[in-house]
Image (cartoon, rainbow, N blue to C red; front, side):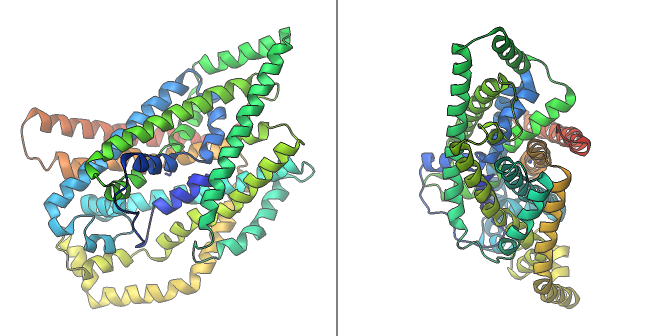
Length: 480
């Protein structure tokens, strides 16, 4: 757990889950450059729901972000350790070897398959599909909500229905060429949006302070008490999901480490990146939740909707954000289509790579004439159905946007679902490849096994508990 999916970082999220062979990042990057790459995957439009999440989280908001940062750091580093252990054990068949690279859709996928076999890869890729489809829905929902804010006479339903035909040509694109500029545009718009929201929020707050009345003082006290109160279980789940969605270095840590001039310093880059992300999220969440929580309208699930309606600045920011949200939609969709249209291609390539692997029966089955014939038939069918799959996914996200028009609640649910890949899989892989492979009775061995088992139990419990609560909130209206 995503993604775990964001105008600028939605593009980074989709590209970080590289599902088919692609050019590697430039070799020899420094620690600072690596930290920047890791931080970019976390900073995206998820922060637009963070002020609302802080109101939900209350007194747990800041400690929760610190805890999530430390949790992401540890589980990301577990993947680095597991990669080293698997490569030492597998020699030329490690997850970074040419054979495994050709046989897998990403370094993380190769590691999950090498440690846990098909179930591990299935868990990873099902989680990716769920989160990335949810990111598509949140982008469409965001564009519709901003369009409704720009044109109040148009209902939310109408705005969602209008986005569908606008998205259809983008959905049918087979390549991201031409859309790569959306990443830069999204980053610029995100920075401009956050800057505008911060300037507007501080201006309103200090204007109220200059013309303080009993009512404004009471509003400020109410906002402060909301940020220091203990939340209910449903509110805590809403906060936790959004906060978890604002992390997700697990997907990118392995390729970033590989690109570093000194891969042994990946741990330092990881620490710098997550420290920056935690500090940035704390600043954005606490300041904006207090500034806008003191106003009469309160904190909106999408903080851009707190900008002064009808002002030229608000219209410009909302128009640009809606356009970038629509243009970003195909980027997380493309990996989903690749996963759905090539479900067995990786095993075939692994079987043909000559790599000796522990799953010999699976490789033997992949080499059988009957299995190869079935795979060829499948491969010949999918291209004709790929456009239908793309349009079906668009119809699905349109339906979700119509039924659950709550940006913050959807973001929180996606963050909870992404815990499968960010909190549960890394300790499972680490336990299989590192802790249990030491075959020692020393205290370090026992401690490693105990820590991994505790993290697995914590990840599974957190995933089930908060996903159930946030899913229930979605079905009941998500704080509408």
